[in-house]
Image (cartoon, rainbow, N blue to C red; front, side):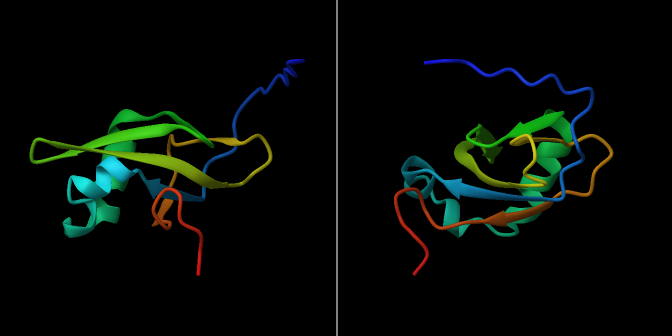
Length: 101
């Protein structure tokens, strides 16, 4: 497969991100967490400088890990965004393997 490389001087700041919970996250009780968006936003601010579509993000809550897939990012120009000095809105999409009804 050919590899395409696009030099980027700086990534655009992220505006919106949608995460898809993995099957193991659902099994670990992801949907029973209170204030999931707040936990994710704080975790991202402390641990990530960038996000790329397809990244798997592991977040922890009270000793339990939850893996989430970055499924949608805006802006979409590079498929990656900066998380530095950014107010990134976080949404939770349908579980892995399910489509919107």
